[in-house]
Length: 137
Image (cartoon, rainbow, N blue to C red; front, side, top):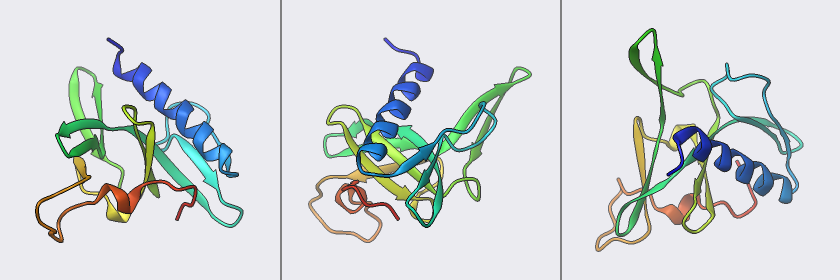
């Protein structure tokens, strides 16, 4: 079983490849002190992007964390990414699908993306609405 750092590293490398293969210029911040993992340049705008790995949550949904978890001086800390990033770029390893989720559309703590539902409700975050098709923004 891989540790969370290895899983995150794999997601960042896959995200970098996905974005570059669609023609975006991507920069990697030096060090681990920034809330964002990548800076994506679409030729007009720079986006601060946090890469996340999704997992299967229920039969028709996936989930990912929209907060960071750290331990400092023996104490557990959770922080959100509000005003620190512009978007999440989420990889679902089971299908190698990516999702571009603007920070304004993200929920706090964890976000669930749904593939199917018996009803259509305004609170549902449809995976298809965020699926990366090569266009960001």
